[in-house]
Length: 317
Image 1 (cartoon, rainbow, N blue to C red):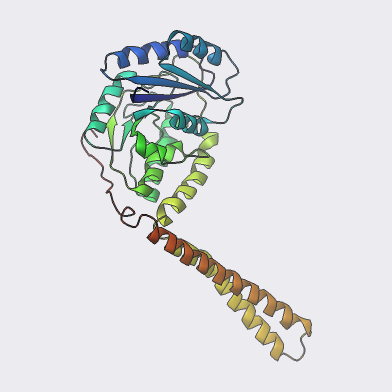
Image 2: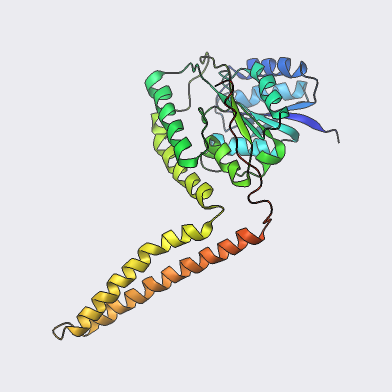
């Protein structure tokens, strides 16, 4: 089987007016690069003619693959399906609305060749609405950088390049495609970002809006838990056990106080003592889980857990 050098992943949802133009633009750029490539279109349950047009293009070009979802699952599952099926040593992702410029692919590949595991696009001159897209994006990116420690100017930019081994060991769910650098950092990566072009949408309508902000913040909390405690799970379980330990102590004191109070009901001290015992038991149980987690982390690939440093190239920013 021939080795594929580059795979390009493009999720599509109701982009019938953009599919052909996107395919032609990608093919033109990739044919100018002297490497074997494949393009993977993932139709995320479109209700227009996106799937039919993509399949017609596939019939004419075997380098184009099409994955079709039975219903709309969202951008993250679509990207994960593309990553799972991609065969390239280098994998790129981009949007299917023609706002990302395929001409920037060459710049991303050059940075990957410099030894980076992930290269993120930065839409410095973003062609979107100010208050509904650009301002919330700036706030979210600032917050993501400070919470996760992975400071990227534009986490929402889908135009990214990955080494295949890096992205294939990073599992995505929910809306985690925004947090790929942070999720991948658990295994230790070297990443950078470069300025890329961004075009105003010509056809179709945006699938994102202010209603998704709350979902981003919930996912951010999940990523913080995964990234922050992946190397030290004992600390996480210790923090979780602390409220139960304190509550158990409070109920224990109440039980003793009620027992010494002759006017109290006879069953009250027993009830509070039982609650205290259960809370103490849960606290100890969480601490033991943390201990087991620490043993797993320290015994599975102990030489690799701290290998690899995360660096950010400041050039072109």
